[in-house]
Length: 186
Length: 386
Image (cartoon, rainbow over all chains, first blue to last red; front, side, top):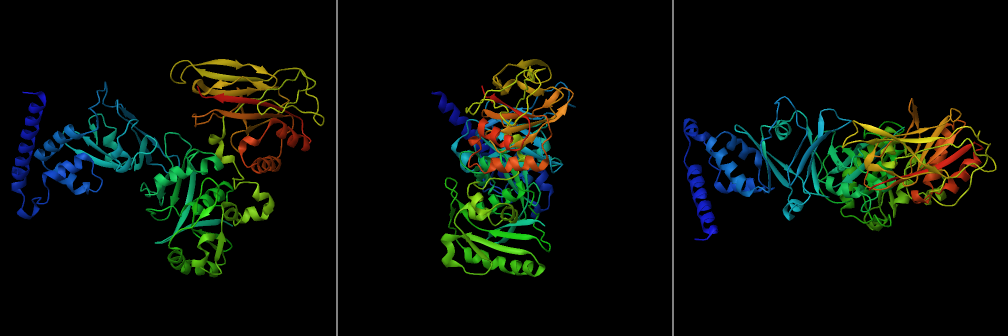
């Protein structure tokens, strides 16, 4: 049997498993009052979010994902499948050392402080060989640790880069440059 | 007395609160809302409006990127361009207010898109709506004692007639509405200015890297040349320079990938032109002169910058450009007398009457200096991208 058939089977298995898990309430969810159980989340929401669809309202979805271990696991599996580029956990000799940039073959992420507004930073994402979607829809960045996933949308790529202004205290900014967080771009 | 620039939008007037040169090639120009980390959707378009080759702001005002703070979001369209240009012009002259109008201030509200090739102002839509929304504020500011003008493209003249309105067909006419320009410059001279900023002091980084000045105290006369990159020395009106010591241009060069370890190099000088220096190797650049030289001016050739250098123990420090993507050419003027602030400002004005910065030649610079009756030597230097 050709390799791609095996691959297809694996994808079908994964999709089925994820679908089943998504529609079975977890023990944590079952402990919640019925009205608190998220009803609106469907598997396609996870797919859209992982693919970086710009119209998706990421905040409530991420909130649900972060409250559920199965959802988080599914979402990370999806990111593995659909991400354009990744940067794994950073190996550091000392956890005290701050990292100021992250680099992979596909992208470079760095920040520079604003000289006028203290506490604000320019977060610059360079993608030298971006795909068409990045120019039209922007770039979705997911920062994943074992306990938390944060998601942030960058504007469309211009001149091989895109940027955001962020508050230095913003948890999403902190996660980007935390060695304990892997990064997925889509 | 400040000049407040407002962008007329279909949601009301939006103030340009502040413009800050970033001038870092890594950072794109950005429009943020009220000084917060929220960016307006027009940031990408504004970046292009600044970018050299596509837009006009970098070419006119020097820095490769800026941050603009506005009072409310603008999500789409290009009708902000005329106001944004005026904001840069006012900021470069130190006139730009923050949108909080006081008695005696000037208020300019504008709508219009810019043809970045010929600087014509293009027609925009919904002018009547924009004016209607702006009118209560225009009346309020008038009562407060401010001078209020609403600029709109000449091509939209059939849509609106009001005492506040002033039709403009190009940026030259828009620039003429700034009070300082009208007072200081006759319109005829504005025509040749290409609407460029008068004050380039804040454009240091965008301006150039500069150079080096070296004085040959040992020469009785200097050779004059028309070549742009050739050094010009004082001629008939200039005093002789004591032929005692040479001026040196000293470069500190990287020894590895960073500037933590450097080596010193004396840049060769020939006919008052220093040999070109590779930008990617440079960490610091100093001009070392005889003590009789009391002021060094850096005059960029590819921007409108005129910058008095600061003296440190190592010599006159030449600021290196942050933008290291293209070659940078400049002149160094070595002076035995300090040129007053007023004279330096006049030199800037003289530079800015040139439609393009690279129209400055060594000979034209020397001609201007001669008219000031000062003793000078002009050197040229080029920073090269390799």
